[in-house]
Length: 467
Image (cartoon, rainbow, N blue to C red; front, side, top):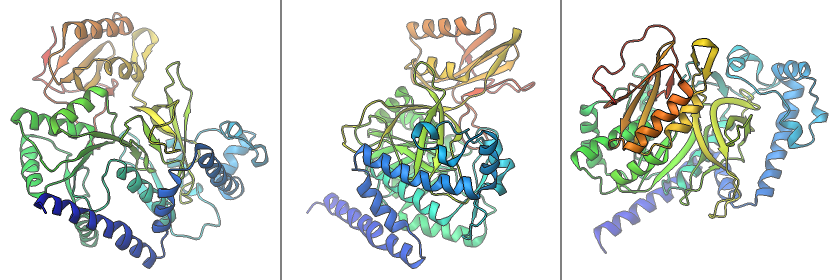
């Protein structure tokens, strides 16, 4: 038997041991429900769309009963809106309930769980990539649901527990306790994860990461889109290769077609898009058909509200199992579009066709005009040479578009870009500047639109204006 075949068998055996024996045993020993939920999700993904919708309605009805009867914030909010539990009999009735905002969660966190809740609540928070961190609570029951959903979503790419996986990710803070650090390291060792912090990215980081990866031999690469792009550019410039790699999984930021193609070409493997958040962990992910993001509807209800003519609208999420902080029709701050067709993989799970990213800053121009950040999303995704971009409003009447390119803009792309921007920005001064990189935000993510908030330093003095 060839050495490579033996290695594949050993990897499969370890993944089977971890998923089928060790993790379920840990779950049982701790009195947790992960093992039961994980088995359920493996079966339920093959249910029909109608069966899944019925299960969602059953779980949602239970949650709404709790919210109306014993969650103080919702009792006041829904009473003020004239909503009564007995009036919610259909999905249309449910969609008339007022959405929950990030500000409301922060202001009323201690009133967003049932009065009679006796289980332990676990404090948690988002990274604040939108500028407003959200602080909330989870329960162990909800954590088991979201962890099981995340493991299932990753498995659609072939990335099962125990596979060697390199993460270009946010890392735990250095101020963690010794116990927390030991737990993190033990977990990474058991799951065979190599986590590389990407808060600060430069050539030295990528060189160090590449050499660590050669020794680690990852089969999967997971990371923020912006981090993966920068790592791929390092690979491309030096014509490097990771022979053990099987797939790349992207997270945290939108994945335009041009970026997907670039990552696939450089790393020489398929690219899978995933979508999630700190509030809910995995919301959806691609299977091997790459037709859209299958939604984890057994744990979440995902809606699109206030859709524009192209079908893009605000993503609202209801968590069916988190009583630590009850999220009902929560405006997560992202824009997306639902798929209108089912996936040929025959899973009954509905799909998001596209996630456009955060509801970006609105740029306000002189004369009372304003431009939605979604305009730039629509225009720039059609320019195939663009890998990364940032729209930066440097003053009330000046906008700079920073571009990181996979290759030089063609004459037709330049013409189209200037025409589209000129039509909307009109007499506002704008500059298109090609730069080698774009500074990341405090959360380690790329902010696509930055509105003017006073004098700002030049973000990339070495950039080249596009003539």
